[in-house]
Amino acid sequence: MSKDGKVRVRFAPSPTGALHIGGAHTALFNWLWARRSGGTFILRIEDTDALRSTAEYEDTIMAGLKWLGLDWDEGPDIGGEAGPYRQSERMDLYRKYADQLLESGLAYREDDAVIFKTPVGVNLVLDDAIYGEIKIQSEKASMSPDGSVKDIVIIKRDGMPTYNFAVVVDDHEMDINWVIRGEDHISNTPKQMLIYRALEWETPNFAHLPMILGKDKKKLSKRHGATSVFEYNDMGYLPDSVFNFLALLGWAPGGGVEIFDRGTAAKSFELSKVIKKPAVFDMDKLNFVNQEHLKIMDPAIKKKIVEPFWAELGLHPEKHSEQYLMDALTLMGARGRTTNELAMFSDYFVDFSPVKERYDASEISPEQRDTLKKFFALFMSIPKWKSQEMEAFARNWCETNGASLKEIALPLRWALTGRKVSPGVFEVAQLLGPDECRLRLKHFNFLD
Ligand code: GLU
Image 1: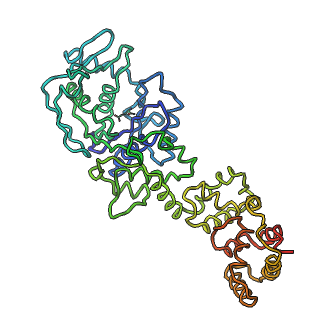
Image 2: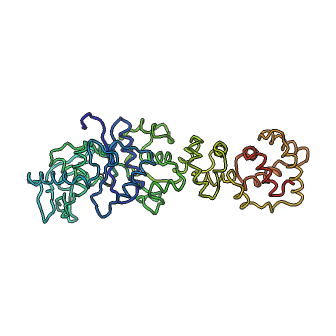
């Protein structure tokens, strides 16, 4: 237990790549467990692989965590009582405890390496918070391919500690009382338990998180799509949605609730409720979650998030007022599963140019054009530029002139949006304003 009995957890990435989905999932569950109970979430950088670890990767991992809204209380950037938080800066500690094991005869030297003698006949019980009780004999904790007992390298010939050793020293020294990590580490845990035992340290609680599989039930990899969290940002997924979606990989707050924010998740999170069955990474589910978050998102924040996506389409949102853009997004409602799609589907609110690219009114016959011209001449002089007035006027006119509303509304929608589907066409017209509508209708020669 930590000094005050509070939860102390850590996320311990190796800075040898960007923050990928599996890492983000592990970080998130650690964060939830800490935040649920007012505990401490620690970021520790496991950079003992000097060749593959870089400062850039460390930065992108931190940026990825921040993007997801996972803040840490101690870490290499902010320090803390249990620092330093990079393994490369903790070499003295590993050396010290390796010496201790050498002195007590529990380890030996071979060449320049230090090797821990795997004991025989010790019954280990791993009481995993998610996987339940796992019993294992010490000699089975570390085995050679031929089935013989294999001793465990703790310091390599180059003087660097191995993962299984450094992780034990650090988790002990940092007072970590819950080790929450991916299921792929479950085979390492008995080895680590042997080292805790040899150093006469109390073992922390363990929880191994379910594996994440692709829809084809194979381990999640590049083949299944984007793996780094920032790729999801570029694809138009909100951090809130990715957080929500990752939390659902193995856990749910209960009562059928699937859409939640960080605070709600942190309040109701329970490690014992995490299922050990592998979780399936389902893009349809992510799209659904993202769309739900887009629906409930504050329009001002939504506008800020969508703006760069409009700009990327070559549009000019900066020429509009903030209120106008917010109103456009509000009118868009739940259209678009991603911010990308939302920006695309609402492009006509920002600029007229994409409308012209999509539509040329070539399907309109000369007779239809005559009708449209008659109608729009009157339509444009409606005294109150309000969608209800426009609709009432249009219905009335169609009735009197023996036309159907569709004959008017379809060309109007095409002329204003260049799309077959959009929010209510009169609402679109209201928001675009009479001047812009006039310009667009004239362009297509629906108005003189
Ligand atoms: N550096 C290890 C990894 O990235 C940490 C594993 C652990 O949490 O013990 O897989």
